Each structure stands twice: as C-alpha cells, then as structure tokens.
Length: 208
Image (cartoon, rainbow, N blue to C red; front, side, top):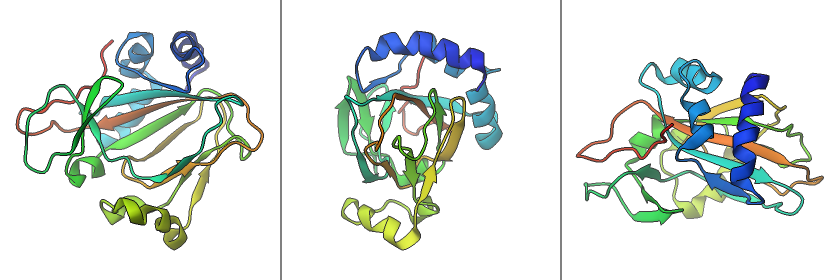
C-alpha cells in the first residue's frame, strides 16, 4: 500500500480501535479507503477475482503487549449477510458484533480471497500469520480435524513489513501464536467475493 493510504488508515482506524483488540468495519473512513477503485486493495482484488470483486467483510486488528493473544488453527466458515433467508445448505446462523452471519456451502468460501494489509512491521517475533499451504483445496475440514492439517501439509510463516499486503484463499487453514517480543501489530483484513448470493441473500459488505 502507499504511504498515503497507511497514514489515512491509521488516522481513521486508531480512534475506532481505542484500546480494543479488534473492530469490524461497516463504513466510515476506513471503508472509503477499501472501496476506492484506484486504491491498492481494490486493484489487487480485481487482479485476482476480476472486475466483479467486492469487499464483503472487513476487520481491523491491533495486537499489543497488553492484548497478546494466540489464534488456534482454523478455517473461516461464515459470511456476513444483510437479512436472514432460510436457504438450503446455509446454516447455522449467528450474530457477531451485531452483524448476521451464516455458514454457507463451501463453494462460496472456496471462491473468496482475503487481503491482509499490514499497518506495522510484523517479524517472526511479533506473531505473524501462519498458513497451511494447499489446505484450501481440502474442502470444509471437520473442526476436530483442523489442528492435524499442519502436521500433514506443513506451514508457512507470513512475515511482513508495514505497507505489505498478503493475499490468500479465505478457506485456507490459518492461525497465529502469541508474540514472543510483542509490539503493536495493526492489520486490516478484508474478505472479497465476486459473485452474488442465491435466493435473496445479500452480502452485508461495507459502505462508504
């Protein structure tokens, strides 16, 4: 990302975080940067998914010495939608931070990508993202079996410098450890999809 984008993201994002370890982005200044057609994130997403790429969920994380958590191995399994429609193969339903979520058929997650924009440096001691290469091709892995996937396929460490953007399949098995030498590690994570949902369901998305 450009220095200007990072400066604007921090100006808009830090007041939202305000000591929190993470916040969901539904609109406002951070959303404007994500939605900018000439912005780095839009250009990357369109380069992978085509002109129909749209941001469908965004989160801002802030890992610090005071909030130094680990995230176990997992697959992202839900999407955020506007309204509930009982559709075959969609479920169970839940609410997260006031947003309605549902577990869709795996094919929808399979076709999504996630962009992870780093607003701070993230070296090996500061809890980088860990992924299991190729795990997105396994389909929906039973929750109890997810921790065994790294043993079978190995893992990759996603080091980053401020302004770097990692792109990965949303369905990939991933996680992170506690930081060994914790420093501030702010990350903007945005999920993208290029297709509409069926049977009246609509992506919640974000708005400027």
